[in-house]
Length: 380
Image 1 (cartoon, rainbow, N blue to C red):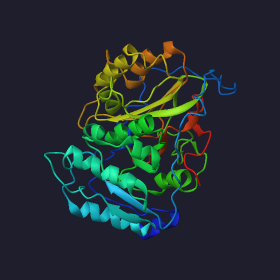
Image 2: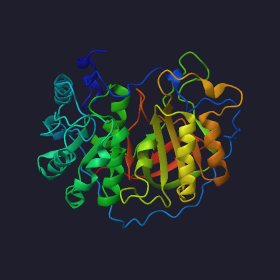
Image 3: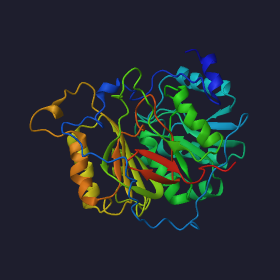
């Protein structure tokens, strides 16, 4: 599909940038929905049981950014890994401008400091200046990789609190999404970075969420085609039930890298979601063990697992006798908790991923495998 053909799908459509970090591969490589044992059956004719949870105080200082509109100015920043090709930046900028937005670039996005996009201070400076610029209405990370954690000591969270703006990215950007929510009360967006493969599916959610300000309901895409039952995008219910709370999470390994710091949100009564890429099952086991031992799993109201891609070239050892699938591991940790939990949500390093608001107030239904916003994530 040509770029001009994508414009009809809404604002920003038409971006097609090569060189995406951790570019998604074929759906058959997904781990999240590959059981080796028959999952527990769920009687869909019965209404899901709502797990009572105490919602966060609605007087809590939550800051919602303004919705975007055509003609608004956004700023692209590079908080993590270096960008080695200027052409990729130019393509992203051109595509965003064709979608109806004005684009500024952070002063240091093409800096290089080893594998980082400049010094920690300068990467943070670009972010601070974007929040301080009255002309800028939204801030998009151009790529992930590694390095966002290193900017945290240099970020001005009071500035962020007083100038709430749309901030979007995923993967390594998980650090900033959750830190801005925790330290400044800003609702942020776990969604595409600039160096990603844009498509109409992604922008359907982006348009409804941050341009139109809808209370979006997230439902997996039906890709059954001529088949009666689709083999893709299947939901696996671990524990049935419904839970409500504010949404936190993102990339699992990045989230765990902030353990014990003052940059992670309080998880009490929250809906926690995870995705990851290039992580073996035993490593996810390790992460879940940490979350159990530090009390996280015992405090959340619900859990959602997106897509977990295997390391490139890894053989399917987990389907051999004596090994575990990811679903087996999740069941071992989560089933005893009794909290609503499902796997297979369309978030993560995949082509057709959804944009979820970190800090948004949501209701999850583990029977249906759906997530519903209870209020808009932006002000219109």
